[in-house]
Amino acid sequence: MAAKRTLSHVDRGGKASMVDVSPKQPTARMARAEGRIVMSAAAFKAVRDNTLTKGDVLGVARVAGVMAAKRTPDLIPLCHPLALNDVQVRFDLEPKTHSIRCETEVRLTGVTGVEMEALTAVSVALLTVYDMAKSADKAMRIDGVRLLEKDGGKSGPWRADG
Image 1: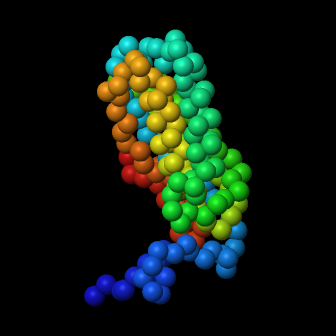
Image 2 (image 1 turned 180 degrees about the horizontal axis):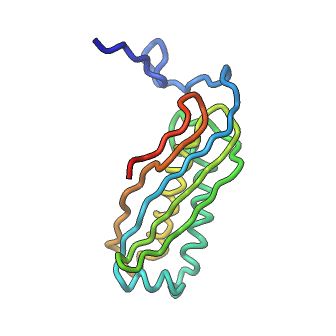
Image 3 (image 1 turned 60 degrees about the horizontal axis):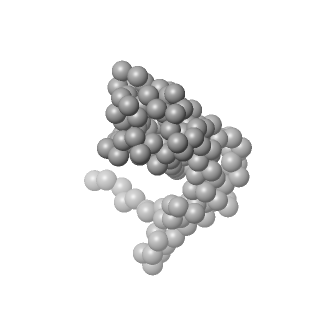
């Protein structure tokens, strides 16, 4: 028989509630996430060659990803506001598939993890690519947003398979 689990974001009365992290000791924490945006050959070329009228698509998307990580608690209910130490947003252009892979890495020393911040950064960075390139291809598709790795905290390191 499975042990009964206590829900972490529900109070004794069954209502949604923020987790109290005040008893936890700060540790170094890190999370990496990824996602892709797939587009037409023409849109890919325009982003790669920086010829879209809205300007530097990847530069703006990089800044949007960093800003999104910092604003995660404004977007995701019950996330704690965190003093992030570092947010990195990287893009890899994949010409064979006309796609752009985004990877984010978020770090802090604190009492709660940064998985949501890494995932939010990827999502908003890719949405920004879509917004800036939609004049070239409205059928772009965002795929595969997922956590790749996390480290720190009570549960220790974790890595995605494949």
